[in-house]
Length: 386
Image (tube, rainbow, N blue to C red; front, side):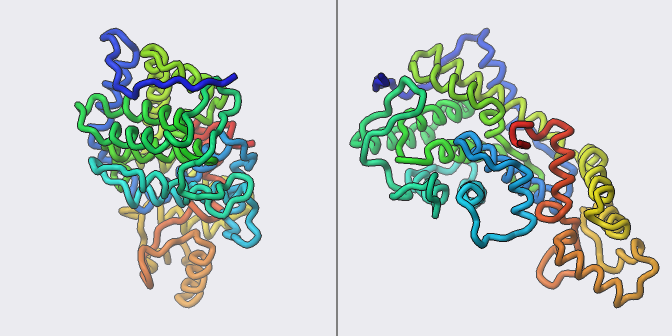
């Protein structure tokens, strides 16, 4: 029978020879490191859209959502929200909540209970199977966690435990503890289980928010973050390590922190490659365009236009410069062809009525090729594919 045992929420002081110390030091170094990425901002932000998809899909699949990456990509390409099934809506909700995190959370600023409750409301919005009758409200009844020996605290104690958690993440400690606090807060939130449903999805969003709060830059020139990859690559291991942390011992919590933060470190090092345009262009973008041509998703003329846009300074090309890719077309024919590419979201204007364009791949047919190449290069787990 699951039992509740109170454990104090506290920082750990691992021994000097603990593997956790090395991981914390390396993560702190990466956080301080000025990225100076060479990937143009318009392309960086589209990559971030794609990683939001991966993060959202991964989080939903941990909870038993069976949507595959190809299913969700096709749904995004069609951009058809009518009659959207619950499982697709669940992933879209997490995407919307990630946008909210990035709009709301600023490095060094305080997080609030209101923010966490809003994450929950966004996550369960308009869902049937994975919804909640009281979006944004803490539970009022006892809950069980499947296959866990831990019984969450009684409902009347949830409020005080959540207040303690928020104080913990906001308290001013030496910065060397920041990443440890990310891992400890992730476990503590799951241990409290403050909502009737959606706790897993919310805690992974909270982890993303804490990484931003503690100084990981996700704006242009910054990083792509995909912390959920740590958990969705091996769901059984994730639950096993949560169980280890549930013991509440220093050893159990240290092992949990090492598991989470070693995984985050591996993912950070991997995705940092994508901010280097000399890697991204030949390894991902150009092969993705070739993939699309081979499968007759785009024409050879469209290929030339996209290649021109990708290789333009700053990743943006003027409409007049696209004549080079369409030498046999008149000005009016070229204008119509550009309009069709914009409609197909393969060219994206840099602003309203702008005649400067970037290659569009986050929500067009090109995204299939991008996902294929990201998988081939090890950025996407096979667990998300099918």
